[in-house]
Length: 480
Image (tube, rainbow, N blue to C red; front, side):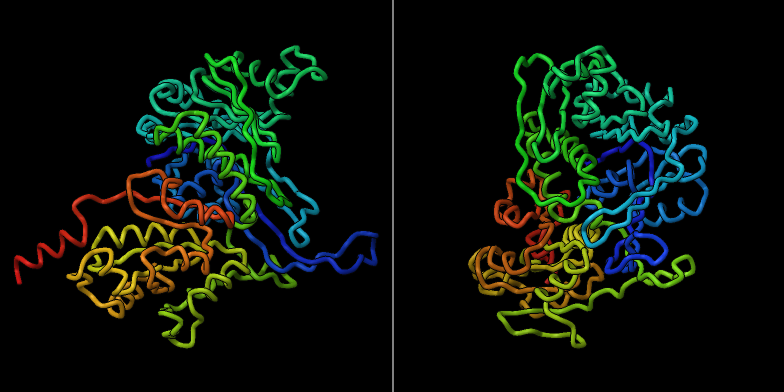
């Protein structure tokens, strides 16, 4: 899906470590830094997550020209960044964590800035989008008159989900859904004259819907889920959130807004889209939330002068019926997944017969690998392919199919399974993301319920017509 994210770009820095003693200078803990992670925050987080889901993402924002901006550009690889005149400094939020528990946060340059300029390319990205997320972090991008006019023009034509900010601009009239959290909704309601002691999520949401002239308001309430209100519906719909152990809720609202825009863009009804978006946000937090994203650098005593070295790409491996065919002594697919997960990385898996590799396969695999830190391919055995496709298949043996897959840079491991479905294989690997190609809703995949059981999610990438193994085999038969 072609999605445009409009909003303010932040740099999030996570300093992770352990504290086992107090400082001799003051009664404060000493944090022994284990790693530092830098990632795109604000609208950049929304764009990053959607791009990892396989969507075509354009980010309409403002980018500074300082050192923080250079980190952001690396973090936003794979996202089309469309920016106006540079602003300085880059807003930076630095969080210090002991284990999984936040200890303190430092904010730099996060005060409201001058309204940035817009360009024709930025406005064109809004006009051509299939869905839009506005991630307002109070830095001025949503106050740009031309950008507001472009958003107002597409509202009603494509779903626009607006995630507001207390220091930001009011949403333009006619957006599909506005997604304030409860404290934000109550603050706006109080400013509008409502008694805060008698106002809940429903009353505050209805006030916002009238004030902002939006088609719906989804008031998020953390672990208590959300309340959905929409024009023409007198009822308030309470949406429960799956129970999740959360140490840091950072990024939940961004994940929710992005998912909601996608589901509405796919044509789902608002109540179902909202319920799925709440589930996605809970799953995102269960997998570590925003803190699980970003690039890690080993810390040294002199962090300022430390150099970041990219971790070596896991070597290709094949595991077949319990027999490990190792390449250079690398671990099997299961241990690779466990290793990546232990480091806070994202494990991606996909599956299929992959009988005659073609461009559609290559695009699906490349898109899948871009969503995480390793890609494990679950490959049907020869007997499994025969049961599914007939005695004339496979054309290529499992050994050769595995070797061809491993020749692709985007594939880290291949695991061959004998059953008709990859369910047992998936249960062993427990991927964070299960990817399939096709034009259907991810949650309708047969494996969706299984993967959701351990907090994972299913993602589909676009199907490429006129590219199939059967078509390729038929073409080869004509020239043989």
